[in-house]
Length: 314
Image (tube, rainbow, N blue to C red; front, top):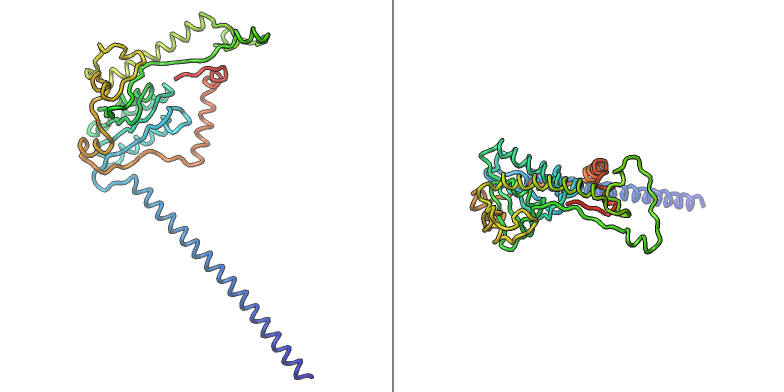
């Protein structure tokens, strides 16, 4: 009997040790798997970092590319802050032999367009040996063309849409509908123009004249920028040149709004003699997007108020 108890105890002890060993082996297995996964992830991060860095580095000669894509707005991909950051990085890079602004924009904020235009002109003066070319894809209209006019040369596709040199502010009026529905507008203000361009009130001729004068002044700023950028290449006798009309790429060359047909690759190869194209357009991270939108919200209260009243300005 004692012998049987001893054998049973020995077997139980052996089984317990086996289970403990299996648990230890599983723990170590999990540890090594996690460690391996961590090494793989770290390696991928390093590789991606190197690839990202290589996108903005060239060993000898390169053409720097900065995108102006979409609506020009403080919170958008074509904000002045974003485009200017890309331009400054492009001009600072020692291997840059030329800078291309690749434009595909219908316009937007005249403020954003003006800031980009001024920075391009400033950088051109600081780096006279580095030329800037605007390459238009589908469209460079209104503020998009404002930006293009800052470049040394403008290249287009024969079917690109170019021009729209004008300023617009539009909205809606609901006074007739309110009368039919029997709706009465009640608003209290301190300041006779605080309910400026209220869509629920008849248009005030004085206010309309005031806003027309403001738009005319911005239009003159736009025209002056185009004339300064394009110089004698403009055929100013062209009917409607500064009226807001648009032209296709072929027509734009004829009236002096563009210089020649061309693509990013073609300009890099044939004009700048630097075939390697390096993209300097900044990529947003989450923190930057949140900060930009917060800043845009604080800085755009007047524009937001106009939009809430049914007005937009572009």
